[in-house]
Image (cartoon, rainbow, N blue to C red):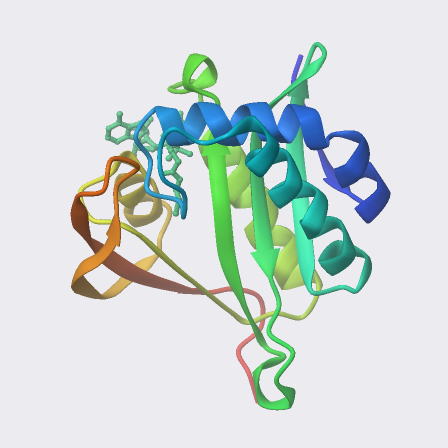
Length: 176
Ligand SMILES: CC(C)(COP(=O)(O)OP(=O)(O)OC[C@H]1O[C@@H](n2cnc3c(N)ncnc32)[C@H](O)[C@@H]1OP(=O)(O)O)[C@@H](O)C(=O)NCCC(=O)NCCS
């Protein structure tokens, strides 16, 4: 049974090892999510531990899906601190462990973050994702709108530059 919970900063620290396992699996599976392969375990762990302060400060919301004693999926929302941007958030680091994919977890994580954003008064979500990836199909099928594509935006874990597709989605009540 998989449950999805929103993590406090302390819980991010408690679950940092499990989150690092998921991040490492995702990068070594070829996803372009900000890291190069091979991803050092200590680097993955430190990256999650550094997120805890942003969670406690309200700049980041992190959800984790757990099954047994491990994290099988995660998604985050990053909130800008600019006074004119409080209505929007960036959806980041949606990941499902390779052996848990294709069972609907990615879509449930995405829906969880979208609903929480709307409940928090956010009216606009945005993200970027590697063009042609499974994630691009997920966002398109979940009602996100393609805003455009940028060539050579980021490298795959093996260093090959790939285009990214920018998406946005209006959630909750319209601004104004
Ligand atoms: C993208 C990702 C989170 C999807 O997780 P998942 O649990 O396998 O997704 P789901 O089972 O909920 O599938 C939802 C939709 O994603 C798309 N999708 C999933 N796997 C796919 C694949 N291999 N090829 C094409 N589309 C795929 C489909 O649209 C699917 O809908 P459908 O089942 O109705 O056809 C997962 O592949 C992943 O972690 N990828 C690596 C990390 C990444 O790229 N994250 C995005 C960063 S912006």
